[in-house]
Every structure is written in structure tokens, then in C-alpha cells.
Length: 296
Image (cartoon, rainbow, N blue to C red):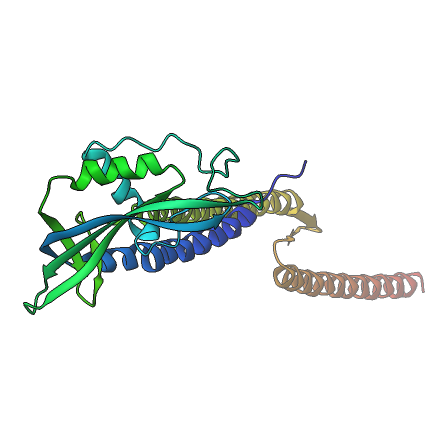
């Protein structure tokens, strides 16, 4: 199995960092921030209860509250509010049941929802009428139960309405969903870790480069030392007819100069020798002439 190089790990973590950055921005800016702005757009008031009723709709398949305006943003907060008021969860499965008289054989079922009609005064002191709606369920008994638990015997209750749309009214203070914040925080942590890993790998890579450069520079002086030793070995002094001739291979220029000097010295020596030979020949000729004259 081939192990990835440090450079490959760096690029992988750069990609992870960029992806985490984009996802972090998405969850904070597109999910969490809109929920915060939506929650802050509600104003508090006091709602007067006018009446309560049970709404009904036909549904193909299980009953769902997805179509209710507050469900997507405030489902968790609504369930928490109902639980704090003593409402027990719906234990009946939200599926089509053939034993109910209001279900037909085609797969449709009747879904029920509690509806509370209220009146309140908005920020402009105008009287507004609206409805506070609950969860849908195929269990009619449970719907009647949570309506009685939440609103029975009350003439008014604290409520919160959307300033730009007074028809959106909630019986609890809207809170921000934590899903966008949680996911944004997770990708923020991944972004920080991957960025730190990129920095560590980059420093590690640069450190390896410096170590390789240092080893390379350390080998060069050794070569110089070896060459100096060879030069010292090759350097020598030669005695040629009483003259010392120095030969060295330290540099080409130095060797050339010494060879030229040596050649000049050798030429001078040969010249002196030739002159001496000529003088000796002359002396021998003169001695022969003298000996011949003496004989005569």
C-alpha cells in the first residue's frame, strides 16, 4: 500500500479546510441566522381567548404537521412548551388504521388539530384576530386532551405574534433551532483542525528541506578535504642536477607556471653543460697542439 506524501496530505487538508469553510458559512448564514432573525421578529402581547375548536383534514398516509407555518422552525420549541404544560406525548402511531370508521379503504385518514381563536393588541394598538394552532394527529382523544390541558379554564394567556404578519401567533416565546448552530460549530471545529494540520505539515516539510540542504552542504567540505589530501600527496620536490623543482597539482595555473619555470631551468642547465663541453673540447685541442710542437 502506497503511503501518501506530506505534500499530498497538505493538499487534502487544504481541500477539507475549504469544504468545511463553505459548509460552516452555509449553516451559520443560511440556517442559523434566518432562524435567529425569525425568532427576533416576534413581539409579545396578551391574547384573549375567544373560542376553541378541533380542525380536521384528510391525509393520504400518516398525519403530519409539516404544512403548519411554525412546524419547520419551531417544532422542538412547541413540543417543549406542551411538555412543560403537562401534555403527554401522542402514543398512537400516526398511520392509517382500518378499524376507524372515518378511514376509508383508499388509504386516506382523518387528521385532527386543536385551534384556539384569540384576540390581541399589536404594537400600533390595533385589535387583531388570529388563531393559535396545534399539532395534527389521527388520535382525536389526544388532541382534545392537549387542548384541555393547555387552555381549559383560561380567559387569556401570554402570546407572541410576528410584527410583519399578525396572523402568526404562538403561545410561547419562540426560540432558535439549534440544528444550524450545531452543524455550523461542527464544521468550524473541522476547519480549525484541518487548518492547523496544514500549518504543521507545511512546517514539517520545510524542516525536511532544511535538513536535506544541511546534509548536502556538510558533504561538500569533506570533498574539499579529500582533494586537499590528494594534492598534498601529489605535491613533491624533485632534485634535478642540483636544482630543486616543485611539482604541485593544486591548480592548473600553478602547475603550468611551475612546469614553465622547470623547463627554463632545464634549458639553462643544458646550455651550461654544452658550454662546458665546448670549453673542454677546446682545451683538449690546445693540449694536443702543444704536445705535437714538443715532439717536433
